[in-house]
Image (cartoon, rainbow, N blue to C red; front, top):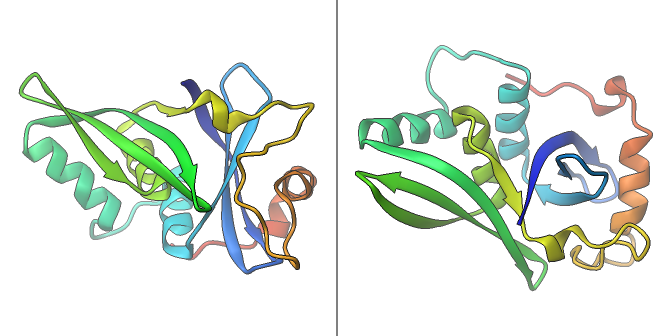
Length: 165
């Protein structure tokens, strides 16, 4: 497992989806994960320190963990099966470890709220020279993961549009 951080959050216009790029700490490799708009907004709100009058879903989940005497120790993004990424929440409650299955987008949004580290399986990071073979295979009219990565790296902040708080 390699520790990663949210590097960029953008919109993939080719299929009207959002993409979160997780970049390895102390490295250059990235994992692009396509996510839904609500999760993109939750991640963007946290990254931009947007405060809301009432707790949103990921804020609520963080509060429930605290109220239950639990802490999110880490998030592991473990694999891709049938073009779907899988993640685990590693929670500690009263000294006992608990692993909870989660969507990576929800896991990332929660980890950002409680300052938990995010890890990605080494195999998902691929090799810079070989490309990222783990990425979900695009439909014929979609960008490949490497094309999308190059596109996202060239984006300017104003190209991403605004996320509604």
